[in-house]
Image (cartoon, rainbow, N blue to C red):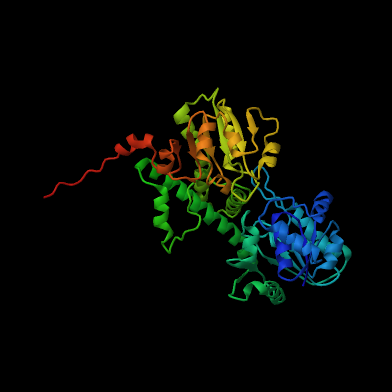
Length: 459
C-alpha cells in the first residue's frame, strides 16, 4: 500500500517508519525545508529509541522518503495520514490550524478516492472539521470526489512510541464507512497475525478514547503519589505498598511508581483539553481537576524537603540536579517537574548545576540567560561542591553510580531522590542522608510516633 504521512513530529515519524516496516511505501511530507533536509541526510530531529536505525534501513531500500511538496504527497498515497502537531495555547485550547490546513489541501489536490486517517490529537468532533476542510478544498475546485475520514489515535508515549507501534496492545480505529474499515484492516493486517488487536468504534468514541486513556493514567499516577505522601508520614514504604498492589488483577503492575510528578506535552495537554470539552457541554469533571492540582503539588515536594533541611532562604546553597527530561527516553522539558524545581530553588537564592544524558541541548535553550544555573557533561561533574543532589529523572545512567566518588564530590552526602532509584537502607549504610518519595526517613520518626491508636479494653 502507498501511504502519505503529513507531519514529521514524533507521531508522524513513528507512523512513517512503522508502516514502512509493515511493508508499505511511505512518503513523509512536511513544509519545513530544514527539517526535511535533516531527515533526508539521516539526522533525526527528535529522540526515540530505535527510530533512527529503522528509518535509515527503510530509506536505504527506498521504502521511506521525505518531501516538502504536499501536492506530491496527495498524489502519492491512497491513504493520507494527518499526523501534524496540535499545540495548546496558554489557556490549554488545542490549535487545529495545521490539521485543518493539511485537510483542506488534500481536498485541493486529490484526484481520486482517498482514505484520510486523522492521527493528530484533537478534541472530539475534530474529525468532522477535517471532513469539512477536505470538502472545502474539493468545492473550491468544483469537483466531487469520494473520500472517507477515520480516527486512529496514537496512545504511545515518548520513549516507547516505536516499540508500542510495532507491538500494540490495541489499535483503536473510529470509522463510519465499510470501505474505510476494510482499508484499515488491511493496513494493520501484519500486526494482527497472532491475535486481533483492532478495536473498531465510531469516530467520536475513538477520539474520546485517547483522552480517556490519558485521564486514567494521570489519575493512577497522582493517586500513587498521594498515597506515597501518606506512607512516608505513617512509617510505611510506598515501594512495598506498590508490590502489594501490583499482583491485584483489578489494578495491575504498570504505572504504579511514586515520584515527583508527571509532565511532558501529552498528559497535561490532554487533561486540559478534556476538561475544556466537558465545560463546553456542561458536564464538569471535578476529579480530573483534582488530579491535575495533586500533580502540581507533587512537583513541589522535593523543594519542600530541601526547605525542611536548609531553610526557606537558600542564598549560598548550591545543588546538583540529575535528570531534566520529564521521563527517560525523552529530551522533552515541557511540563517537566524539573522546571518547577529549578524555578523554586532559584527563586529562593540557590545556584544549580544540572546533568541529563539527552536533554541538555533543550535545557540550554529553555534556560538561556537564566542566572544561577549551569550544566555539566557528566553526573559527577554536576555534583562537585553541591550541598545536596536532587534526582528528578530515572535514567539508567543514574542507577548505579560510583557512590564513593559521588560522596567525595558533594559537600555533604545528601540525596533527595524524586524517583526512588535506590534502597534507603543501603544508602544510609553508605553514609548518605537519603530522602525519597513515600518511604520513611530517619527524621520522620516524630511524625510516625505521633500517630496513636486507641485499643478497646478487653471485657
